[in-house]
Image (cartoon, rainbow, N blue to C red):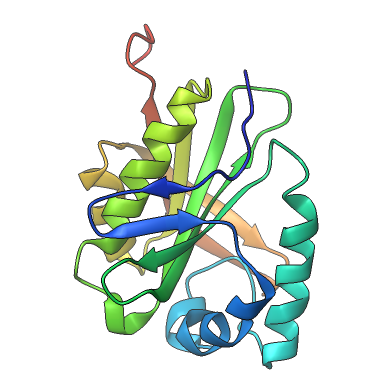
Length: 183
């Protein structure tokens, strides 16, 4: 496994790049401070731009680690920050879990799918063999993104969310690298 960290990725409509502190305000107003978005994620809705800035400070420091993957999703036509996508590496393995958020005004335009496909390709290029994702069963749109990216449904799981102090039912998806005998 050769980690390369959060390197820029371009698609036909998007630039995926590292976050900067100047992203705090658009991230907060776009999705991190929006209960409509955060109700289905593992973390709580941010209460202030300062809280978002604090998270970005942690991520910016973490970019020093080549196994840290967290991208800002920028629509290239407008230059606007529209979401985030990241991958959490599972220990020393060649497996990771991806997650994403898109600001509501950019929902249903294929941006999450486009970003997710690009990140999956990038991670497989880094040597990942297995990429998985979970989504709250009350958020079927996220599952459709996973399906459009070639991920296969592998079953249901319960997930405890410490930040929200609740257990939720999730659908579990996975995609294996081409040539993997378990694919």
